[in-house]
Amino acid sequence: MVNTQGCTTQARSLAQSFSCSGIGLHTGDLTTARVLPAEPGRGRYFVRTDLPDAPEIPARIESVRETMLSTELVNGAAKVRTVEHLLAALAGLGINDVRIEVDGAEVPLLDGSARSWTEAILQAGTIGQTAQTSPISLTEPVFVRQGDAFVAAIPALELRFSYGIDFELSAIGNQWHSWQFDPTTFAEEIAPARTFGFAHQIEQLRANGLIKGGSLENALVCSAEGWINPPLRFSNEPARHKLLDLIGDLSLLGTFPTAHFLAYKASHGLHTQLVRQLSNLSSH
Image 1 (spheres, rainbow, N blue to C red):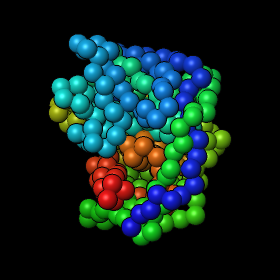
Image 2: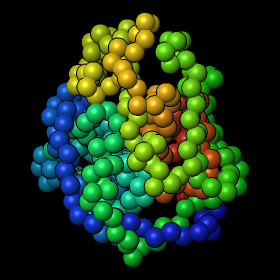
Image 3: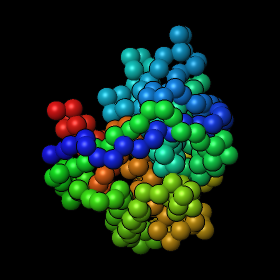
């Protein structure tokens, strides 16, 4: 199914640290994430600086616990939620080794996209590490599905992500976006795409303790009549945002296999199921 004899690439970290503060999507709490360089081979990992002994939470599939409307990582009693946008920015820009200190249980949502994270990373700069990364090469497709929703990893000569969505609301409808991995285009084509939601679901989600920090400033909201807070940054911004989420969730593998990742109507749950399958294959 897999082999690890692909091309090795140089691992990268940040040249200097930076921090961003904001409201968490689900908790509504104000938190600060400080992103720092990490030693070669350390990978991407979170540190809960507000907890005793500052426990670390690896940004690996083994840490995933909850995937309802965001991805949550845990290590013992320590947890950090809504990690996908920051992880997508780091992975999309080729950052392998980084320490992320958070003073609360959720990463700041900022404007609902990865644009601010990406701009901060580019301003901080990146440096090559002494460690090398060896991405997995697939020899057969791997996929997971639930009903007509699926996410698949297909052997390919280049790393590519494609995402399709289909909603009854006419303002969204059926949309697709495909992007070949390239850190130079990530900042313009993928990072600015914002999270989105539906006006008719807001009350129920809040009653269930979710999206307490959601607002028209950090999420696109769609109703039967159309978008409540236009304009969109792209005509297919929702599909691009789902692709952004996919990149963040797939980054929990550590390095991306050389594959075409194809998703349709999927979710954080399906994304992470695929990651688990790929992780299990690579360990055998």
